[in-house]
Image (cartoon, rainbow, N blue to C red; front, top):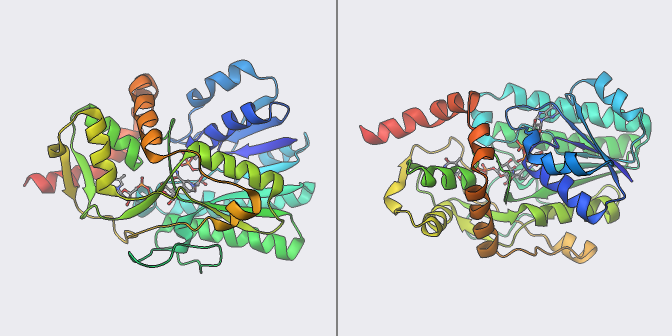
Length: 343
Ligand code: NAD
Ligand code: DAU
């Protein structure tokens, strides 16, 4: 099988490429990524060094001509991970989210259709379903889409385009919707790596609002296994939820990190809440479990321990991605929030 993996220099897709390399060494992978602030080829040095079934193309998914050029080499399956992925950035600057996540997906769908790919898989998110109360049942694949942030609205729009290309043009598609991923190579703007790194440096750990928001945490390698199953066995036109069976409050996560690092809870600082902050996400993954036999393999205790150890052992990776423009973002996002706590 020859797969075009978009966004392959990002967190989840770099893990996915590594997963494919181990599980299906006979497959050929083309990694297409424009290398935004979140794209990092240092996450793939082992793959680049060891494989002749792998190539990297620097290109933007909104650029039709570039995607055509890649497709002329022949591709069986397109897996679209490429996106602007961070909710806080979508609140600061929504435009690029619509451009990449909506327009980019539509460009890929058109090109996929033109070349008659065997399958198009869209990597989506549980955030398209909106938010849950504490006692509401978990999201299923038939829960209505009610996104609340510019990020989740752009992902929902992309999901609807994927559905439309299936219904209108008969393109073979699947959509996966997963909960919060964690694991190695995650950009340190996201909750878990941010908290690990700030704690290591004895910096404040900014918790939005009361910190009692709930997320379902999924180890990235369990997510990769789910996507792989959907690619190979997913029923045409279907969406599949993927979740970690692991609902935790943000405060619980941060306390777990502090304890593992032997740091004091006095580092925690409650700061101004995220506007439109979704209270709870929870995934009902019965469909992928019963149809495709997927189950998460990681317990959270094992996953978080391994993740903390990974960040401890890969200081040069995260120090390099935190330089330059990330500093500007960090100061814009947290500067006044943390400052207002001090005054
Ligand atoms: P990430 O931000 O770490 O990586 C995104 C990658 O996409 C980067 O390598 C970036 O360079 C690339 N990219 C961005 N714009 C591009 C463009 N126009 N053309 C080509 N490449 C472009 O993201 P992630 O956290 O790994 O998420 C991957 C996918 O999974 C996204 O679609 C996201 O919506 C979805 N998702 C993520 C999570 C999570 O917890 N991180 C959960 C559910 C779904
Ligand atoms: O649910 C899947 C989604 O998970 C993905 O679609 C997104 O791409 C991914 O970024 C993630 O979105 P979240 O907004 O849930 O993740 P984030 O790591 O930004 O935040 C997790 C929770 O922690 C959320 O309730 C906000 C809170 N938070 C986050 C940061 C960065 C804080 O309290 N403080 C922080 O500094």
